[in-house]
Image 1 (cartoon, rainbow, N blue to C red):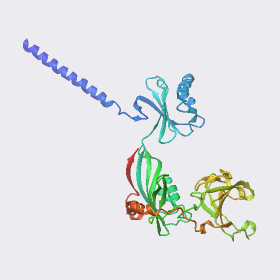
Image 2 (cartoon, one colour):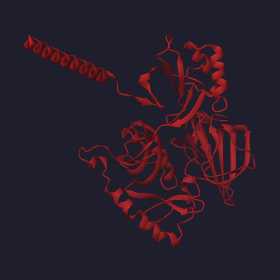
Image 3 (tube, rainbow, N blue to C red):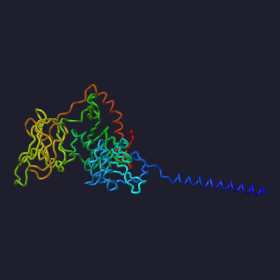
Length: 427
């Protein structure tokens, strides 16, 4: 009898152990089944039904929330609670938004609205309890990149081929605007550039930072470019070549970026429409789409801003006692007489006003009161680097130049990747 009782006790203990093991295994399975937290905008998205969409033309904040079962009185209180921090009427069509909807509500109504005005910043309007607004930014990773290429058609196309942000091409065109005629670059010209680019979510480019060094080989002649602060008080930075010569000139070579010259300065021009009579063209025509910004090629004061005859809308700028420039056929004039403009300021937009067969700006250039071809002028340089800073500059660029020289061109890489990248810092 005692033995039977002992046997029963042992069996009962084993059953309890198995039962305990089963419960533990079940608990482990439940733990494993829980999804990994997915944090974004400061929330665990697993706690919500997530709706992502973009603002449609005609959408309003209220209409979006009404579509997801919120009543007008609640929407009114949300708008009132948010108005001191964010104007919901500022939502722009095409911008993304996210709604976080409650899983505990049978209608799964939204409790938070996240709006992204750009790829970095976002605005959270949380109305799960009272209305709270916070403005945040996504983490930005700054990557330093090295890129080289060979021109086949244009600088623009070469950057597209290398899958490089086109803002780098614009920055390079600005750096070399005074020393290289980008309207006459040739097939076989080559470039190298070291620059920083900003990314969010590791792969989405949100802008280009500093061009740290550049090299452009035009017609076999290399031109280096290195930034250097020449005024530590005003924080003025200019680009200089390998011999400490300022790359900037007193005048830009062109009043528009990435256009094409459709007609050059030509005193012996003949036009079929006028019976091939000589009709001198004392300007240089830069063709570009309507609305393209027109830039002042140098510092100066606006002496004319009007619409007149064949000139259409035009602006005339006096730069000093020697030089004056004029910009014809504008769609819009953005400056008035007496305004002081700096080199690179937008003074108007490309149009077709006056006598013109297509959208362009006719750029006219006066030297000592006589119209001349700007491309044949020996334009003055900008201020050179001071002797006191020259030694410091040459020492500063030495390691950067070595690094730039070590970057191979595509034909020299023998199958290696097109680009090298170095992560330098995080923000």
